[in-house]
Length: 380
Image (cartoon, rainbow, N blue to C red; front, top):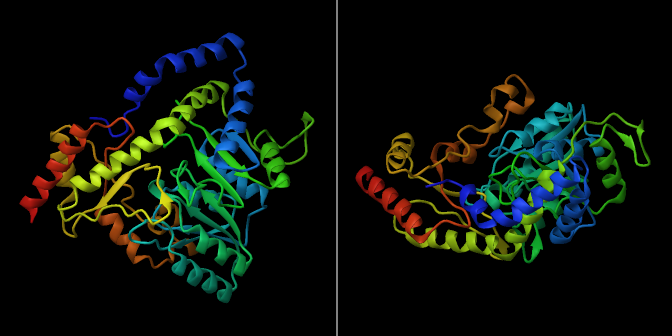
């Protein structure tokens, strides 16, 4: 059993993907070929924004957004404590202070109440200027943007949506990657929409920011002359091969993959409802793209033993994430390490992510549920 079955996906899409790759090879336009701009237009249309600028990976996408805004020393960027490292790494690398905020225990996304408390605390202390809220669409469900946007307006902060795991999700029909002043995503292979290597994208309705991001992604070039560098940028482009692959996969994602993975998640919910696990909660009006199906184990469960038991049955299970951001060694000795996030600390002890993808079978879901239930009954 595969955690995210990319082999099965390729077998289904093989003819179209092979043809698309062959087209790029024949053209020999490996950098900035036509497929890149075509994909950008398709992604912008799907998300519902004016601009999409592709780049080399999701981490670069965040960095490009922060650079376009001039985020740096003395600024505070508010980041959920329970997420992947890059969301906090990027502002810190720009010289800003990452201020870690606790999350909602059921959605895993940044808690708006704790966010407002953190903003007020930073303003009162006066060491940093609150600048950006970097909200993450963790595990596929968009964050609570109606409330987060209200808080950003109240305190004059920019909103960055880190949609690396959220592409395809929505709130009342509005798509993820459209909620931020700038939004970003990742096309890492295991993401809801993934390529066959690294890739990312930046989304915005703001013409000025879009132009700055496009310039920054190619060494700060002038829009009309790549040898006239008007700012210090970076080298972050999506390869044409990856764009061609993503065009095929975006079509499948839109036509059936998003629906199929949501159907599979509902089957997991039904199969696991009497196991004592805390199951994922999708808020009313929200749709998740299910980057991961993550449950919470009862406190005291031997998670390592459970993973080992599942592995014996050829069932992969992963822990996202086992360490709060504020306790990462890179932030030791900094103000970022001073964060009280009890929900995150508990989640790091209890979460477990199960195999889920659009091609998972009913038999595989039953196998996972039976193995989990058997272990938990013995533990109990």
